[in-house]
Image 1 (tube, rainbow, N blue to C red):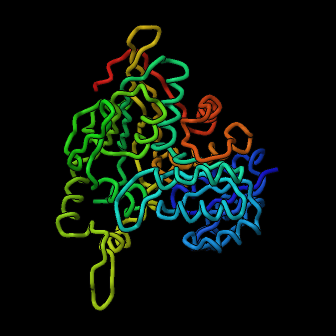
Image 2 (cartoon, rainbow, N blue to C red):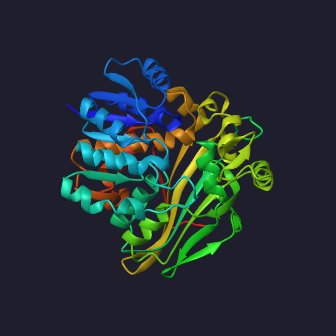
Image 3 (cartoon, one colour):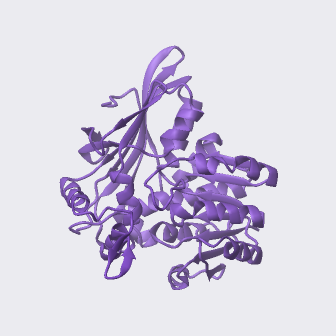
Length: 397
């Protein structure tokens, strides 16, 4: 018997709730909590299982979180709220004596800055409390790290180059929309690029470096170099890596809209005065853009996310490409959400499963690649995210 408290009920949270409910042998009691309880109630009603309860909670309020945890007594908290709220939820877990899992690293509200240092600083406190904190257990970060760990365990003596490639070849039939929280998405994309090479971080302009890459079952798509948080932990945990980069695809229409948003100041995250009130332009933009949770019904196409790796095995250089393709329509039929939410939500559930089965249970704060990848990889195939391998092919990078 195990109890899981899920905090957050957006698109990813909806997927997590569905997948938790599909595995009652592991998750016997589920609570979905969010600032807006009616959203949790709607998801619980759509799933229709008696073991799901809901609650209202402010994820910025440590004491409210502690009270909820002490009342429900979960074995683990799955945090799919906003990245700004990671630290308050971690604090609450320490006070209530509950282990923790999230899908994205902490970032401050007033600065688009992505770094694990704030959460890694909790390592000793979680160790002393005998609690486990699992960081970045979505797809990227998350499965991208597990793919890398799997490659290191089974196919390489040394990994030398790592390129994480993320393609969304879907069409949601909107002029402009983001696939997850617009505020988080636009902050991420408009920051400067960064990649790791020969022990140093190299900074680039936002989306300055790009090239066409070919994705399975999709074809060629222009792919843009960005900074992504898992690079920080992967080069630390796999020190033979000489170069690590992250690439994501964007269509020209999306980039044109994004450029206009930046040029007119709507991507700003500082406060401005408007009719006697202080507002943040990007938060206002979020309010008028399509809700990512509403994109699934008419979404066509698929995503393709994977790792392209070069290194050495038994003294010989080899290449390896491991990836998953996920259909937007199939994700919608199963959970009511599109594939970007699905590919993040499914791994979060599997991570919680790994903890509750005792397979990923270790006091401290850990990134996913620091655990055994094998049982997680097995569950990806069972839970809707099958993976594929290409050995010694052309990585194009």
